[in-house]
Image (cartoon, rainbow over all chains, first blue to last red; front, top):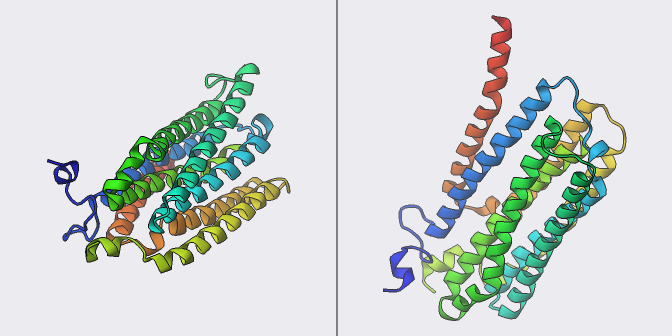
Length: 200
Length: 106
């Protein structure tokens, strides 16, 4: 029995939802992610609202590094969506190029983030130092874990996972679309983290 | 490709139109990022700075969700599911604040 027989509606549309299970599954997962990050954003707002004093992000954190990371992550979102569009055009070579760039941009993001963290630790700024740094490390650390997870999936789809393109091209295209939706969500979270933590 | 499968993916002719939209959104997102950084250097009052920064972030997020994630053309079921999630999120966000306000009054 093939894997596609075990998991129904990976390609064809379900009659009751009008969608395939891949899309339903990834959007339900993203809804749970909205609640996860939403809960932490709510915590940030409540902590900041209740604090007698709150430092301006730019006085502790590096705005140029974070702005560079914003540019890197937005660029990676474009390369990700272009990799999916390349599959729709049946251009596997372009898919590999854009997906490879997405993984490299993810690596660049993590590299810049590690420089930022190392500088903080060098100046003895840790999560325990104050409430601002505690929420900063929690939010950016959780976000970085999501970037890492997305990179692993993207690297798999670029490498060994791409063999599916030969046998089940539509199913592979759906997989890339689902991975893309997760990657764009990670970008979307950063779009809010950047001004909230670094600029305000 | 069955008709059901074909409905899930844009036709090849539409892909070019999508790609042009992706590039336009990319340019807009870059411009809005620089705008965010520039506005933060103007020394606005905290309330105004929060409003402007979150306003720009909301526009950027809408572009990513609407165009890159295709939410603007997605089925109602997914949009309704996300709307329900946002209601729960707002509930989590507002309940502690409202509860504090009520406790302070009592």
